[in-house]
Structures are given as C-alpha cells and as structure tokens.
Length: 60
Image 1 (cartoon, rainbow, N blue to C red):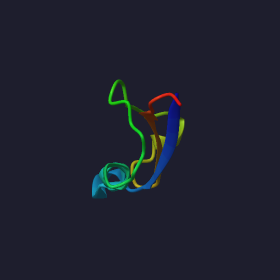
Image 2 (image 1 turned 90 degrees about the horizontal axis):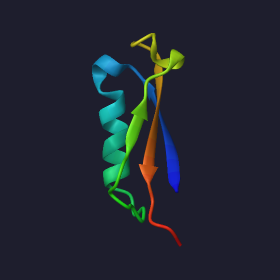
Image 3 (image 1 turned 30 degrees about the vertical axis):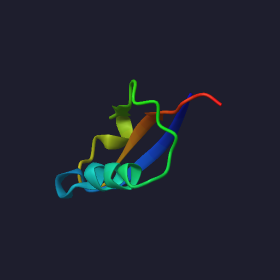
C-alpha cells in the first residue's frame, strides 16, 4: 500500500526536498521498503514542476 504526495514548485530551489522533509516529520506508518519519485511530463519545467512521491505504508 502506498500514499502519494505531490511536490510542487521550483526543483532548483528544493521543492522535492521540502516535501521529503514534510514526509520525514509526519507520523505515517511507513514500511521503509520502496519509496519512489515520479518525474513525469509535469516535471519538465523545473521552475514550475510537479513530482509525485509514493511512500510505502505498512498494511493494516
């Protein structure tokens, strides 16, 4: 099971890092198996990008 975060903003100014900081400071029940980022078409403009970050969660 995964939960998705969407990082929005300027990639050159740490937009993805800021989202990871939010994830690290959250109380998610993380599985720590395979988290991943998707840099798709919406991430082509690095000044105004959207990157999907998927976080693996432990099953209920």
